[in-house]
Amino acid sequence: MTTFTTVPLFGGALTANLPRDFADHHPPGPDNQEVFLHTTGLTSIIFDITERVIQPNDSSDEAALRFHYTDIVTSSADETRIWADFAPAALAKMPSTPAFPMFATQHLSAAPSRSPQADFTDILLVLVRLAAQKTDIVISINVSHVADEYSRADVDLEARKPGPLLGAAIQMRDRILETFEVKDWDLFVNEEEKA
Image (cartoon, rainbow, N blue to C red; front, top):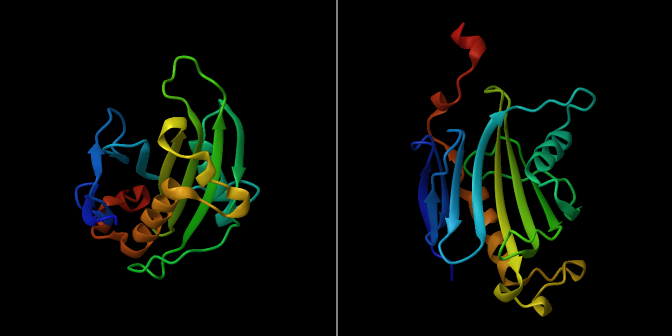
């Protein structure tokens, strides 16, 4: 049974429940991203604050979700597949805030320098849209399936058989949807308001 704990994000401006066996990983780079890595496995949870995406020819939420997805996936993929249909999700603590999930898989082309090489990676994405703040928050749970870390017999996505790794990630995503909350709206600076 996975044990969850409330985790402060971006200095406590946001919070969500995450599994206890994920560690905060501060990579060098932008302050708009928080990364949590599983302490014994190949799963990551990433919270990314971005400027709100509005596509020139399609301003729909689905277009924004697909834009963020293509921004995340690597160009070295042999194949990517989106499995779940586009449908809104509910944020339990922020019911009036639009959120949209996506589930996809990515099969990477062989890279001899990478070890261990994943057979495929599951990507569970949640897009939280904050219109007034002109902000999108992209939450991604990335689950690498490496040959020695899972049993191929346990996974058949065509038959809706996720296996234990993806099953755990779905539980994490659902818990984030239940607990994600903005505690300090001052995190989001609107340049027009500052002028």
